[in-house]
Image (cartoon, rainbow, N blue to C red; front, side):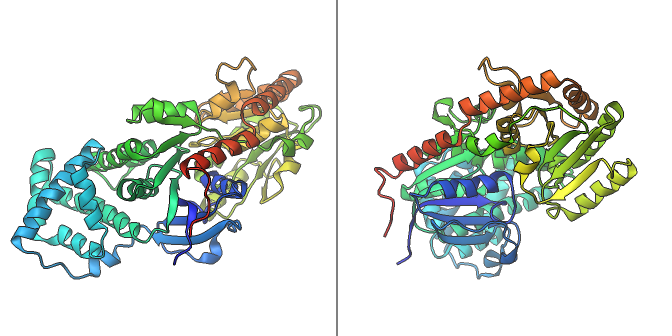
Length: 492
């Protein structure tokens, strides 16, 4: 009999192949929940070499599985079912109800019953029929005439097919999930969908912790997508992601988010405010105390950037900022602390920009390093990301007493300015890609020793009061205990 776990983490597109962000959080969660056992299911975009995994699984991980999300071979190569007209009529009617339910974000008992049938042993064959059978084509035509009758049918057909291929792939993965009492996903994507399906079909518990808002991220990507030239095709994808997101908000047992701004967005997207619990990231305060010191006391002033070299972190903006800072405060140097192998081409472009701006003697790429040693010497930390949730690097800098200049992404404004806590600012928040605004804020701090150290002290106070790791660990431990109904952790 398969060995079960207390919690199955269903992860999409990150752990264990991508460092930082959600991946770091997942590793931290498992390492600090030692009283619980975990299974991991990773949904990845393409086949990967296991030797390229960035993390070693903690000892309380009892199983690991990965599935290529866009591998449709099982569906496309299986034989079609031979259904009678009566059988197809029943399936036709049920599928119509299911598709209409999805649009509303709520699944009826009839639709739940159909999904139970679809995740049976004949799942791929049913899906093949749905995509190719004449009766299924009639169903598609009916839906098309109701909702997209003014759009071109051919493009609609292929978009509809692509969306349902992914849905069918998710359902085909469902039966392969390990046995657990709680299914926990860090997002309302396909991983969250699997976790919530477990709740809906089998009565297990489901938890979603949203770091970034999945639906907002997909909307932004789709609106920029060049491969979707027609607005109605973009609308089809947005409607799809909106539907599965609303359904998860309605069906999961717990919605957890990192900060108040995220909660407000979730409510805007259809979640009930009274069902959302805010649990922030936490910092091991004691670890960073040795890096606390007075800032901006000597030259050269040291500017730090701690992150993997990735276009989402917008290293190019940081380099341009440093070109302006260098002109305003000549005795300055900077580190970019973090791995450079995540996006090799982007790293090459960054080094070329460094050469072009003549900053090779000013900015150093350190690669992977002990960040604590750099925190001890930083006078200000910059974060120029175009997207974040609750960046640990900002919290770590604040715990060290380093003033922060960051873009207005994710929880950064709440971290730096606080939420009615009367502590004061811990730095300055600027606009995304606002090179001059970020540079001006950085120079202001570098030139004003008293301001820099006031920011540093405020950061320490805020982290110690609201973002202690031990408090966050206790919150998650309590959540898991409650969902496991009394703490009987080990399954047969």
